[in-house]
Image (cartoon, rainbow, N blue to C red):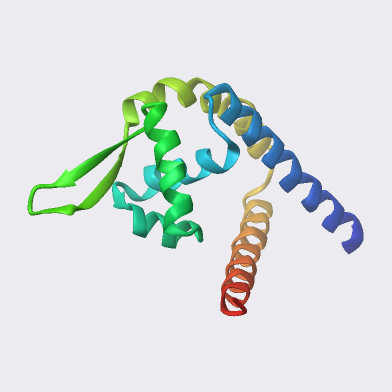
Length: 149
């Protein structure tokens, strides 16, 4: 396979994933970005708004809007710490998340698992190595771009 074709397919994969996640998000009344930030909370557990802002790359003002929209849809709740009422933890509502997104992702998993089983172990290792390396490159680029601000 030529590298140019591989790059084209990779770009198409990421664009298709973006559009799919946007459609999934829309079904839940969210934007794709709000859905991704909700995913950060699910992956990492409750965190403060400033921690979520740092993790996402958004300003604290912008992340407040995200949290407001997620809270309005009852995907998260704000929890004030009794020891410091200025500090607010953002907690994902996993019950609602699973109820809304669970069936969609179960269907997606059901359709992708047979595809994964068509690859040999060493082929999966190569694909995995590509994605791990690409993630590293994108993280480095993100840090460089942040440093340019």
